[in-house]
Length: 285
Image (tube, rainbow, N blue to C red; front, side, top):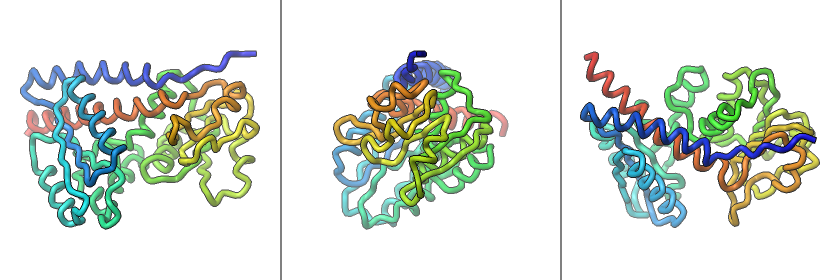
């Protein structure tokens, strides 16, 4: 019986970071410091942790970061005004609005305010539309990270049946589009899907992004399936029953250590991409 391959996201992230660091250094030599602005509204502890991690990663790999902290009572109008200010700031190449925002804020309106050329987190509908059509510059970071893992381990995508469990606008939906653009046959499942286990049992590739711990069961999975667990639940538990699925899978991501670290690596890569494009616009004006 063949051995199950563990798809190590930390390993993939390290390679992306190394390339990003080299490119950031080259930009610095030309007088451009790639800069990511993070906007955090409120006092959510997990959000503070994520923003701090992103800031440390920027520092480690040669980018600069600006952290904008807004109070919990911030209005939609105030948040939009701050994002518009960052859009106009030539020092800033990428803008990330940390999710979630307090309930009084129109999150979608805030996301849509981010300038397309600074939407390094891939959250605008304009950016999503371009990615879906196959020419977008900045796909959502976790779906892009999933594709990076598949490519790093040379997992075949073309002609394979991929089942995406989850339809969020920054994970399930863009992941399905990226797979479709690579000639996979894609089924998108969700909370209203009838006979979910039957759909999953037909998959060559499973992307679990449903936000429920150990949701995908071992007896749903056919032998030889590639499983990407994009879920993260309390207690370092993914959306896949890892122990039950491991022996059935040909390859599987661990939790933690799967798409998570690659997501941050893609965010920094996109920021450097944006800085390079800005330099090119300056050069060719």
